[in-house]
Length: 413
Image (cartoon, rainbow, N blue to C red):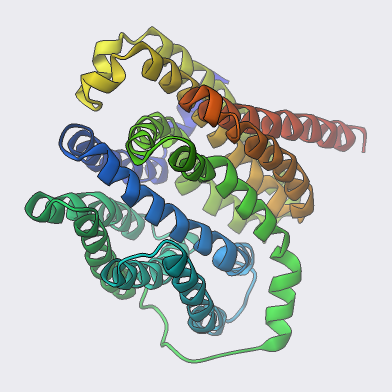
């Protein structure tokens, strides 16, 4: 196992993949530090609620086309037409998303200025996500490195730069929209391999839909597990609690760094290999999953050995040195480790076209999470963190049992 890891880390492609994760992570450190020390918790909580709802719309509307383009891009002979089909689909999907966002704005009695910038952010985010998938799946590693760095600047540095001058939740949203506008422009230049055209094929849309429609349920369940608790916290507690919980959750999310390296490096290679030799690609994926499991165990042990004061570098001492919040932070970190393993393993099911199995796993986990979130009224943020942990744990258990059975059947075959 150790020798396999050493051999993998000697590869240039992996080093570029690591840079594309580590450098953006440092930018995110700056963001978290600034937010934790300088942004009012209630104000940040409102911002998180706005952005979380936009994430829900994106998950519901774009999960099918994004899953389909990732799955089929290496199997199409005419990549120019293929990519333009998906870029054309963005137009009607954006209209649907904006209508949903408008209804939400009416329900929340949202200021029209906030709605306008949120709408701009939604449109820009959808186009950027498509551009990023194109660059990623064509395995343009240097371009992907630059894009990953620029993305963190757009998502984190520009919003807090605008906030520094205007000090409001609107300032954070304006900064986010401005950052994504710059990001879209940059990725259009980087991914401009093909000429843009309007291409629509009803037959192909049907193929993509019937391949990826279960992803909608998986994406919804994933959103419920990762972000729905913010709305329960806001309802049962207050906006400041949303802000504190979000800060703890974001820092614990740094556990995903190794999963991100895997995704950036291995996933594109495996998908491309799958189009050439399915069995070799699947065996490669299972091997990588075992390696990542070993790495996650080591990472969690290191986390447990770190003293509390280390985390004050990122999190305000009034939060992280509070015993209750630190306990919640520990739960969230372990949950994040499990969540990364879930994400990595999920792509295996996508490859073998067993997305409906994932839907079943995520559906049960989402129900557990929603039930757990109702206990926030009695037990506060601890209930939110434990419900997230329980959800990720049940998905990991189901995946482990299914993959073990799959591997056993393959050996017998």
